[in-house]
Length: 148
Image 1 (tube, helix red, strand yellow):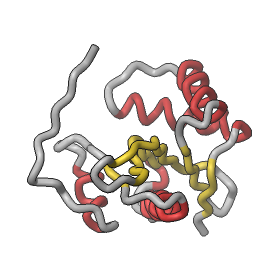
Image 2: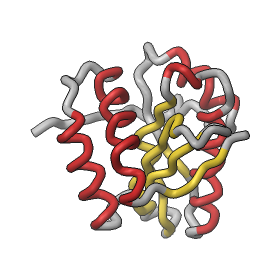
Image 3: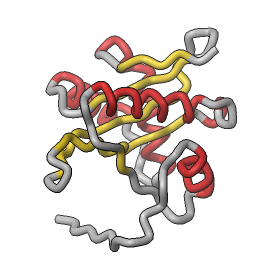
């Protein structure tokens, strides 16, 4: 039994621990206190939408974080699926699929035109997952970034 709901400040403690593990996965130093502050700020300011998943024992298993964007050409809201993480103990049990489906549902409910995401070429799990849940690899565009 998988349950997915939108995160609130009540979810902050376990969510911050998962978020810290997510950051460590991407080779950032562990900082649970910083993770908690970051997530608390996003939730309080309504700057992102975070969904959390739970198992049948009500243990938080994973999360996804969406940031709102806009598509000028489509003249609609577009959601950036910026973060997706499931604790290693719960991988392969459909928690990531449930989180993505909840993100899609949220996109439709907010009259969004779609979800976009990026992942490392070396993220084998993600690169196998995303096409299975309906995402298409964009081979027509270049991706650029600039760091301040």
